[in-house]
Image 1: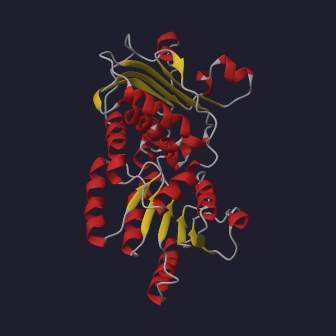
Image 2 (image 1 turned 135 degrees about the vertical axis):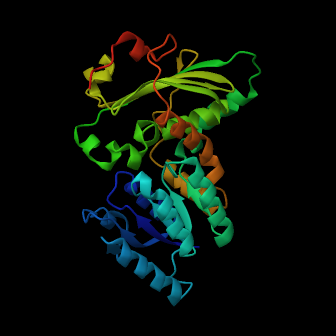
Image 3 (image 1 turned 180 degrees about the vertical axis):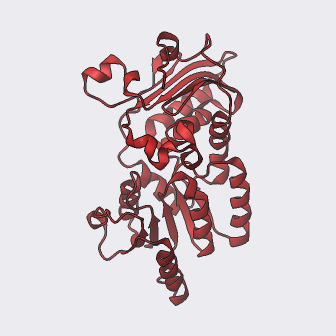
Length: 321
């Protein structure tokens, strides 16, 4: 059965993945909104989408459809808006009697989850989040392998994610901590969720370095000790990435061995959507541990470089910004 979708944040970076997922699962996008009108990508996936640049007019249109007939009402709202608006847009979805499918991070603060949970109960609708790494075949296989292991020692894990960004990043909402949640939330949240999913809950966390372009620290999980670094500074790129002209470097090692999951990303959003439509999906509580961790990192005082800091921080003096 085809479902009706509306999409918030059509001009954003991640919206194309949601547009593809909606189409690939055999559903219909009937309305979309974005303050920017550079949304020609809609034509690659759907015809005759009602588009708005003002949320108030979008809201009025969706409400009109809801009151007109069950056939025309919106069943799902896909949320691709800036991070700080996710909470409000999830509330909007429930208010119009629709389920929400929200990009990461679902919210910026742990207590926002509690409020949304109350609204879920009141409305009878659901808020789902996109944790696409949990449906990656190679990572599912890795988790199954790790869960079968019986060991008294914890794994040693190193997370490195360097994704070069220009000066625009800090000027945009992504560079404003109160809107994006900072680097740990904006570019790290899905990695933190993955690590918690693989190795269990957080027992200890400390931040060794934290500024607008680089942050790193140490996390102790139930079954792993993790050193991590997130950076948008291209000077942190390893030589191998520079030589290949790649602006991004991503690495997760377990006990010195690289996890290989560079392929298989193309259709992960579609897999998440299909799971939701089949009665599954990841909800509020699935997102809580990583949101709590990222919130804690954002509000922690950096304690300085330590012996167990990330190798890049140990071998290279942080730039003065």
